[in-house]
Amino acid sequence: MRYNQRIALLLTVLWLCCSSLVVADETEVLGPGKWPETVDAAVQMIISRLPEKDQALIKGTKKEDLIQYHHGWGTGIRNYYGLWRGNRKLLLSACDEKPCLPDDASTKIIEAVWERLQK
Image 1 (cartoon, rainbow, N blue to C red):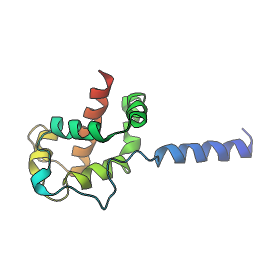
Image 2: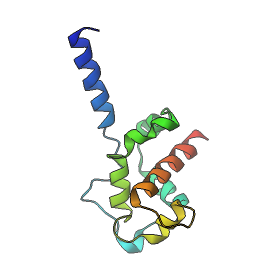
Image 3: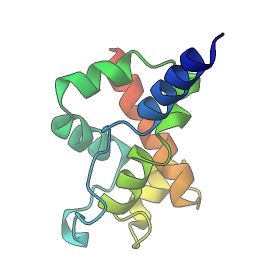
Image 4: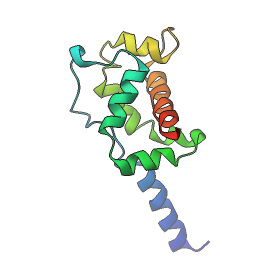
């Protein structure tokens, strides 16, 4: 592969990894009174806010490739839905009623969104 093609491929991969697919601006957060308490409620809220083009992008992503959304979209989920600020009910719902880290919970939520969009 030629140098220019490699650069173009690298830029494309970086663009995809850092795409605009983010549920919330990191400065935008819900207050505790509005936090979803279950994964199902979070999924409903997320899908209702996702533009159709982003829904199609997620639906077309292979399940094993969802990790690419951990830092952008996952960060937005963790911040917006209070996973770092005490939303214990959502953490427990995401991790089968066992304590887990917000990073693990956001991964479960992303997977649940993906599964819902596959239907």
